[in-house]
Each structure stands twice: as C-alpha cells, then as structure tokens.
Length: 291
Image 1 (tube, rainbow, N blue to C red):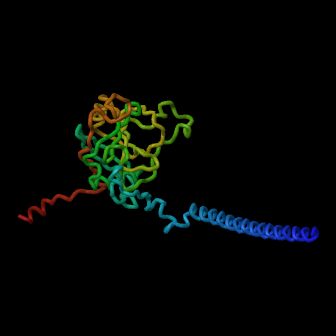
Image 2: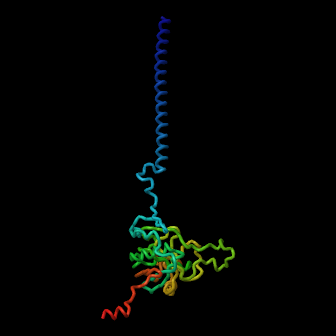
Image 3: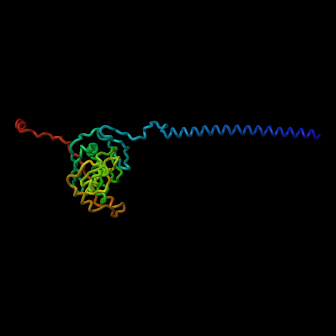
C-alpha cells in the first residue's frame, strides 16, 4: 500500500511539474513576443520622429520656407493678414528703376508738409519699395504711431498705426552706417550715426514700409538701420510734434510712445526718376502753323 501511494504521489508531482514547465514555457514565449513587439514599436517611433522632423510627411518639404523673389533686389514674400496690418501689395520690380542720383519724396501730413530725397545710389531697393508703395497709395491716411524723445525719431509707415503692419514682402538691409569700431580714428561725434533729417528703415533685417524720421542730432541708436534718404524741408514740423511729447497706452507722458500730437500721412508721393523730362511744350513754329 505504501509503495502504491508513493507511486501516486510521484505521478501527481510529475504532472504538476509538467504543467509548471508548460506554463513557464508559455510565459517565456509571451515575454519574447512582447519584447519583440516593443522593439518594433520603438523602432517605428524613432523612424517616424526622424522622418517627421525632416519634413518627410509634408506634401511639399519647402512649403514652410519663405518665398524669395530675387533679382538685383530680393523680396521675401509675406502672407497678408489684416489682423496685424500686413496688406496684400504684391512685390516691387526685381531691378531698381535707377541706381544713381536722388528722387524726391513728398510727405503731406495733417500738421504740415515734409519734403525729402531718396538716395538711389546707396539704397536703390529701398527707394524702389517706397516708389512702388506710394504708387499704390499705401501710405495715405496712415498714422505715425511712435515718437521717441530719447532716440529723437518719429516712426511712420504702418497702415494700421500699431507697429505690426506693412506690405506683403520684406527686404534686407542696405546702406547701414559703418560702426565706430570699424574706424578707430573716428571722433566721439562720429558715433552718432543719424544726423537730423535722416530717413531710415525701422525694422533691420525685415524691412518693409515702416520708417524713421530723425528730427535731432545725437540719436543713441546703434548702426543697424538702413539709411535711404533725408529730409530737405519741413523738419520743423516734426520738431514741433516732438516738443509736445509722447503718451503711453494709458495716456500718461512717456519718452517712447504715441505722439501726443496726432500725425497722419494724408498723402505720400515719390517724384519722377532723375533725367525724366516732362512733356515738351509746343514750339512757337508749331503753334504758328496750327493757327
């Protein structure tokens, strides 16, 4: 009897051990499958992330890059957006109309007229941009939104008067003043780069329509702003506005804010190209023959 019971115990133990072995084998296989799947998933995630970062899922890999229309001038196109005042203007011609001499510009405002010249030799693309936008009446009825009585500038050219607006393109700097470091022998006065009457673009590197009118010598601004022209008459108009000072968003006096005296450009025009002649008047001979 004892031997029979021992045999039964051994058989039962053997069955239990076989079940445990089968269960261990299944568990080991399950873990192997899970590990394999995990490795595949991890590899897929890494691959997906790499391709996504590289733009592999974009319909056009370059669709997020700015479009540049380039010739003698390079215009980087912007998407029109009325909420920030980016107007749909198209872009100016690829080559400047002229690269020598000057071209007149007249800024009519509600506080007086300002006459200026555009420097076609030093800043041909800037001059072309102003002529292009003036031809589209871009500046008309726009407000000069910023006056700095410490930088000695009045800033204009934003169609919505908030400092965010401009045309549907930008362009690179030209005719930026040379820094004092580049001229060790320069006198201290030479470190003031923008004498009274200087016209400069307001947004270095992403220039558009906004511009600065320097109404006083000695501005502390660095040599970063493209100079494209100068005021020849009417600077006293800006000086009077500057004497009244600026206001912050709460209507309190400040050194850098909206001019206390509202300045609105009613009309900005750019004159004929140098050398362009008006229609000839009829000669005396032609007049006599016509009678």
